[in-house]
Length: 251
Image (cartoon, rainbow, N blue to C red):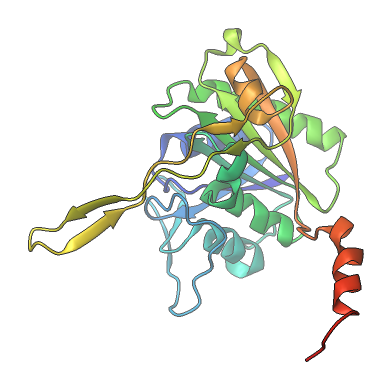
């Protein structure tokens, strides 16, 4: 098996190194990652300028683009051999609930899934993560599970791991995405010349975080595994929209 590994924290991130070493025991790996931290890049592709890829001192390929760029390049021509699966992570911090809409880690996995490959995003749920080895073991376990139980073509897994020693992990739970409150206000400041600048404020606190959610599982000491689908269509509203489109004035 050949696995492509990427992330959004950059090619020198501890989580990326741990993930690569953990999976290298079971498969051939290729690492293609951003040349710097690109957290919260979401699913952005670079279209207005060329991308450059270079082999770094650690043997990984660093790209001056987004996580999505990295995976897209790797699968569509950068690598000599197309991978069989994509892993993104280990992210330095959680990707719970609404976070998946902004996460570069989840976006890297999403791009793999868009391009037809099984994909997993894995994150260590702490603002100051320490137990990367635990997340590495979780990644290896999930790899073996997916080999025996292939993912549907429209599904990727968003995995969050409590920042605990492996012996303290209580198990695994299949979860749904929770939800946060509205983000905190922007932080207004000024640059050295007195011009106004703004920092994006912190994410909102947990709102929908009860039993069954990814938030709840992490707090209880369980690895959270949330299957995500790529089709965002709200099918139960299609008939309603068709109805109001067929009544009243038309353009």
